[in-house]
Length: 78
Image (cartoon, rainbow, N blue to C red; front, side):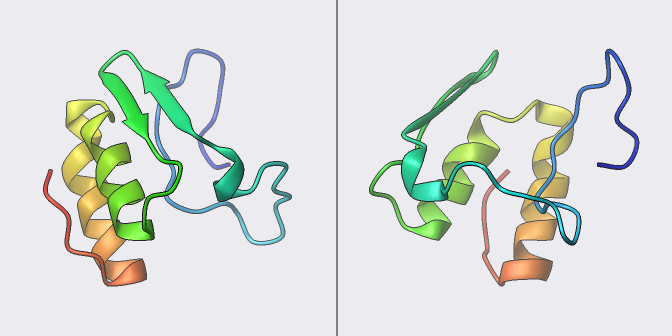
């Protein structure tokens, strides 16, 4: 992932082309951040994305919403 270094914090909406995925989205039930808990299991892709935006750091939320729309056509609220 570009720009990753010790102490760096950030969010990615996509993996780099050719990157391996160890866990499928169906295996993840919850994501916990310092901003809350996102319940993901059994949710639609749109619901999962919205829940993840809600627990992202505030400075990343609008960017995540823009990318969700540009890449997936999802309209989310920051």
